[in-house]
Length: 350
Ligand SMILES: NC(=O)C1=CN([C@@H]2O[C@H](COP(=O)(O)OP(=O)(O)OC[C@H]3O[C@@H](n4cnc5c(N)ncnc54)[C@H](OP(=O)(O)O)[C@@H]3O)[C@@H](O)[C@H]2O)C=CC1
Ligand SMILES: Nc1c(N[C@@H]2O[C@H](COP(=O)(O)O)[C@@H](O)[C@H]2O)[nH]c(=O)[nH]c1=O
Image (cartoon, rainbow, N blue to C red; front, side):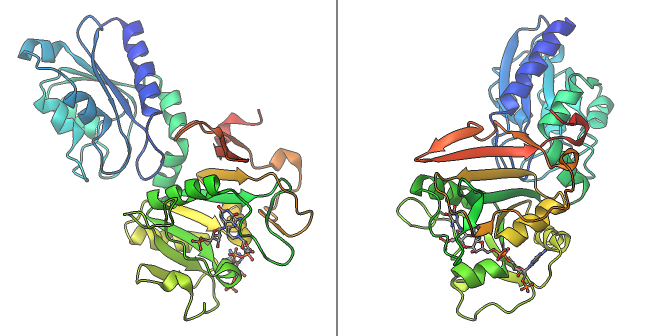
């Protein structure tokens, strides 16, 4: 096989992976080539519960005779999984399709999902890995971090003014951002398994915390509403509208994430307020940020983020634009939405 064609196919697989969505599962792309390097089919993973990239590509592959399948190569940005989750094992699907060769970029490493490469080798396929591994790891670097720590993937919501305030001096904050921004925030709520706020936000806003469309109607999927903090929240708090909520009596973000994992929830939205955002950021437990910035000034009030223990510029928490799930920087009515992810530690200052 021409290695430059395999490399080009892996680049395409990585490009396809970027069409996916961040959350419970990693971004993965796959390309199937014939012996000459001609692309026969492509696929990518569109998010939890949808086919994996390999299965997606196989579903788009026309019928191949056994010799052609044997000569074909599956090029995939992550090691094919070896377990039955919401979808069947990709290793099995590749074997059943009669594909003879597999090249993957980065090992899965998961306790249950890993081992696909070995399963493929045992079944007699030629398996190679490590091609564009750094790029593939970088694409999902926070997902790998979250998985290594057995915690859910986290998304932080910050809806702030030009001067970084999330509430005015008197505590009012509804609304800083525009209806377009609010709709996006509700779409994010609908895409996660749980949403976390502090007791302070419950006392200040009495939020409902459900996910609603532009008409104010609830989406079909709703996150579990989780309040963290020691104080009792009011018996008639709006977020208690149904039983899909709970309070975790702790100020420890690790404990909250452990509880969410125990509920088998793999993606959580940290909605705030400031103290909660600060606690998760300080512990480096934020995997992505949706930052909504509205064109207004308060000059005083609640800062969106408090003290992170950063004493000097070199110790600043650095982020980079994340062009997954749409443009990294977008106009939402009068507001600017910026999608960010932490800069990988090894990247250093830009
Ligand atoms: N614009 C926006 O995007 C948003 C704005 N807001 C605004 O933010 C304001 C509320 O912010 P804030 O007062 O900071 O309230 P928070 O919602 O951040 O809750 C803070 C409270 O949570 C408890 N708590 C739990 N864990 C921690 C921890 N690790 N560190 C500190 N406290 C913890 C404490 O209460 P306890 O004693 O009970 O333990 C604390 O007083 C409101 O005005 C609200 O409108 C809120 C969300 C989003
Ligand atoms: N003020 C503010 C936000 N605030 C968040 O929205 C919560 C209210 O949710 P609900 O009761 O479900 O409508 C509130 O408690 C806080 O978490 N969000 C934003 O996108 N933009 C804003 O300007």
